[in-house]
Every structure is written in structure tokens, then in C-alpha cells.
View 1 (cartoon, rainbow, N blue to C red):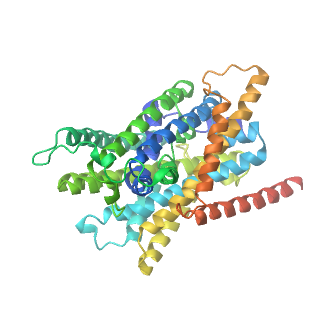
View 2: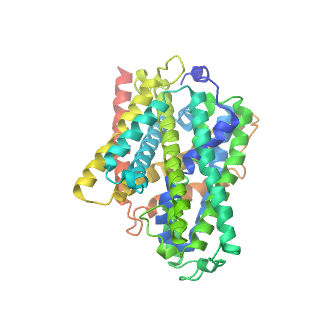
View 3: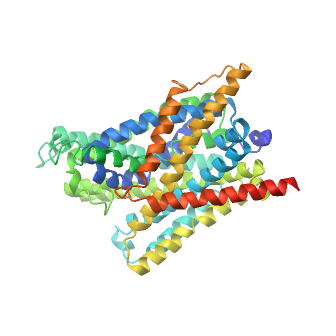
Length: 461
């Protein structure tokens, strides 16, 4: 890969931009809508699942940050896999990361119509048309200079983070003091409906799959490295701050949702956030929350399009994607890469159209896309820990002193790898019901292997 990667982008993303881009993608549909599925599997124990997964992913972020701080380039771990493990792994990991964020784009576009149609004036607008409109808007936004993109994402994320904080504060007020004629709720709902583990340890374990999906995008900070101001300082700050904020948001949010509403009444027909406020008769608050949920969805879509385009650019730079995708315009935006990634997300418009014609629930499209994204992101996290082992061995052999190291190396790597392999295995179970999604990702890897061998054969000529 060309080392000129560092100069091919404008370094206009500040620390606040980087933090909000990563938070923006990680706090999206997985929390605001997908958490309903997690709660249905694990009950109140989902709180513990979010805490455990958050701690595990902190080390994944530290592993990726160790490499990215040392070499702040676009393409993140695909570049590192190519350089420190093998060109084959660089090829596979890069294309899988790109595939993952295409799937995330599909997820966000698949469900935004469900949120929008809760408003009466949108009731007769088809799901597919809503998806198409938002697709066009966010493709346009990704052609803007990266500084403008960073500002948009910063304010998107500020809106939803502020809302989550207000909801947590108001939720705890309801728990301890009540509101008006509503008495204090307390924490009885955490154990009153079958206990903290109502579906046993197995339910708790199965809940981890959708929890993993909820955290998808937490590693996105690394994709900003080539466009970050002073990455050796901004990236460590971003990593140290992101994980604690996300843990607080997720864990406290789950506590509030389950404390205020019995876990077995959360039906998944709307966001659990909206359902909680509706159950207390706060209709205006529920409408406001729904608007924020839409904002969160679109924020995650914005970040996912950014990530997929930057990875495609990096693949072209490495020579494992057509060179046209390494071209940038005068604002240093990889326009061909943005166009390709955006065009492929149109698949969800067709899926929404077909689903609505068949009369199937629109949430089915969300679950199909979420399964693809979950399988791909867990593979990515596994590869990060594998690649970091090779990277550290090379650095130690060369006597390089790293400024930002992964704690508990290499033991935490092996723990994380084992956990992620376990997550993939869970997806094959009937209770989780994502075997078809894993098989699609498996077919994608078979296709990538064929493409790799074709590439090698051409290179020899």
C-alpha cells in the first residue's frame, strides 16, 4: 500500500469530530430499536450483557488504536493485515469490513421507514420511498468536504446523546420519585417478572448476539486516522473517552427501560424508548424521542457510508480493488468509492418494496440485514485481535517503543478471539435464528477467495 495515503486526504477532523463519528455509528439502530430483541432473549440480564460486551470491546479498540496511532492511515486494520500478516489477510479483512458497512447502511435504511410512519402525515407513504429519499440525501452529504461531514455528524450525535442523557435523568427521577400522579416505580421490574435471568443462563448468552450488533461501529474511529488532526494525540483521547461514554449510555439506558417497563411487554413493534414514554402517557415526549431515534438512525447511516467509502478507497490504494476507487476530487473526497457504496445500499429499497408487496413485516428486512452486519462485524473484531498479535511481535522484534499499548496483551487477545468465535457459533442456533445470515457471509468469503486466486493468477502474467 502506498504510504502517500496520509497526504491524499485533508486532515480536518478534530478530536470532537472523531469521538462523535465513532459514537454516532455505535449508538444507532442497535440501541434504539434492536435492543428490543436483546431484551426479549435475556430479560433484565441484558444489562449485564451490555456491560460485559462493552468491556471486551474496549480492548478491541485499544488493540486497533495501538496500530493506528503508530501508523495513522486510511484502511485501518486491512492495511495492517496486509503489512504485518499477509496480503491474503489484508485482502479478506478489507473486503469484509467494506461488506460489513454496506450491511450497516442496509440496516439503517431498512428501519427508518418504520420510525417515520409513526407520524400521521407519513402513514400513506411507502416504506421504499422513504428509504429512497433518505438514501439520496445522505449520498449527497458524503460528497461534502470532510470537515463539513464531521460537523454534521458531530451535531447529529450531540442530539441523540443529549436525549439519552435527559432520558436517563428523567428515568431515574421516575424510578425514585415518580411524576405527577405516577408514583415512584423503583427497581422491582428488574426481578419481578421471572427474576434477573428469566430465561436462564441460556437466554442471557443468546442475548449477546444482538448486543454485539448494537456495538457495531465502535471501531470506526480508526477509519478517520488519515483525516485526523494530530492523530497521535486525538486517537488515544477518542478511544479512552468513547468506551466509557458508550458503556454509560447503554448500561444506564437498559436499566431505565427495564425498570420503567416490564421486560416481557417490550414487543419490538416500535423503539423501546418510545414504548416506555407511551406507557406512562407522555405522548409528546414519545413523539420527541421518535424524532431523535430517526436522527440516530440517520447518523449511523452517515457514518456507515463514510466508513465503506474510505475502506473501498484503501482497497484501491493497496491494489486489491479497481484503481478508479482511489481517485479523489478537489475536496479530497473519494467520489467513485462513495458512489459505489451508495449504489449498493439501494438494495434495501428493493427489499422494502418486495416485502411490502408480500405483506411481510418490514422488521423482517431489518433482521435480515442486522444478521449480515453482526456476522461481518464479529469477524472484523476477531481479525483485529489476530492482526495486533502479529503487529506487536514485529514491533518487539524491531525494538520499537509504542506510545499507546494494548493492556493485558496477549492474553486478552486470546480471550476476545474465543468469545467472538462463540458468538458466531451462537448465530447457528435456532434460538438466535441467524444461520442464513452467517451462510450468506460464508458465501461472500468463498467469493472473496475465488477473487483472490483470480487476482494472483493475473499478477503472475
